[in-house]
Image (cartoon, rainbow, N blue to C red; front, side):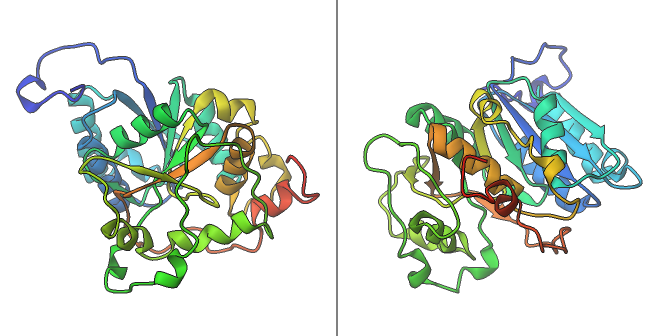
Length: 289
């Protein structure tokens, strides 16, 4: 286990080389960010580093007591943590590109600042991307306030990957795009309840995209340009993660895994203006982007 237990927190030791860089964009959320970091502190393997890009006006992420406490815990566990100030704000895509530029590990996990991971979730994601050999694997976030809201019709598009994950083209208007309701509410939680997946196991399935918790092979994401399309977008936009995933999925393949232990905190969104979907801009001509 790469996570150092409390009996060795005070012993000086060189942290193991990170297999995953966990990249967390944040702006004005401290309570949620502290919960996100607490979820990371419960992960045993693989070795990882955390990079937080803080775009709050007052640098709150670097001063909040709860966030600071969780940074100390992660560092004591042998997890390097960097909290970087990144201003001015130029939009979500530029924020993600900034984080990607700071990464050095073989894999990068883009984790939103309002997502809690159950213990073992990072290991499952890493095991899946290694076993599947694809470019991107995600754990769609679940809203547990919807546990009593069963939506079987929205799960009708569920399709496990049979055999190897293959490159796939997804665009608005294609049948693959129509899979998006799978990740509404707590649909994956209800879906998992009916599957015979062993504890700690996972099943790969076809997705339109995955939001909130997405693991890439860094080389695959870089080969597809990362988020280099950010200058084409207005500052206020959404869907930048979709555009990046589609480019990777088309060349290297991608999948979601179920069960998903990624829990959405269901805090109010910080992206209130959603008039521009980045993927509509990037793929305006229906081409490669």
